[in-house]
Image (cartoon, rainbow, N blue to C red; front, side, top):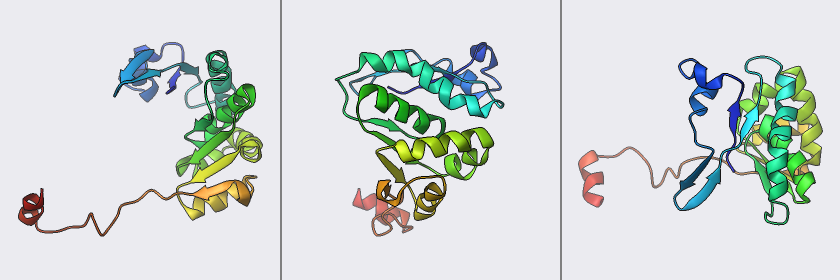
Length: 174
């Protein structure tokens, strides 16, 4: 499942809004041989940030119940609203929930009053929280996560393998 943010009239705003562009995504797709469902999650763009998490959770709850007994874990790949909704979905399904932190979800969005409060509610209830840096893990602790919940899995590049070098020599190695 890969959710798509939606609001009434989103398709009409495709020129000006990322959610408008995403309105074109089909409800179901097959990617690399895997069936993917793209449920729409209701949100109010640019305002009412505190409603995004509850609306997200309410939008996916009916579909999530169809997966009861068929999945092992729920991953929310963004602290808010995805992580908040993943905790609720995990509780509904009786499975662990994992929240992955990327950066601006904690450093920007979680500074807004509504998202901050709901992120502080979600973090202690998540089974695990994965941060892409130690600094994000520290911020998560400040938002209510326990160190025992946290794992740091850094995004990065193997500098031994990927580094600037002579173009002709690199092509010759291919």
